[in-house]
Length: 77
Image (tube, rainbow, N blue to C red; front, side, top):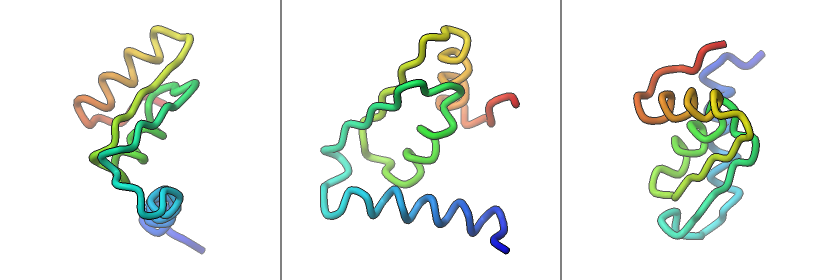
């Protein structure tokens, strides 16, 4: 059974390997229905130099995502 750290490392490896040899600084990643920004945080961990864009119809989710991604605090559950 994988522990939490192993799962995060697996996600990191999958995200990073999906882009092959592309320079991360040249990537623009769009997260549609970004919610609280959890996925964007994982992508940012794997590809810190990429441009990330999150879209959501809910202004309250976008506010939570903005706080989460700018302050590094986990989003509320």
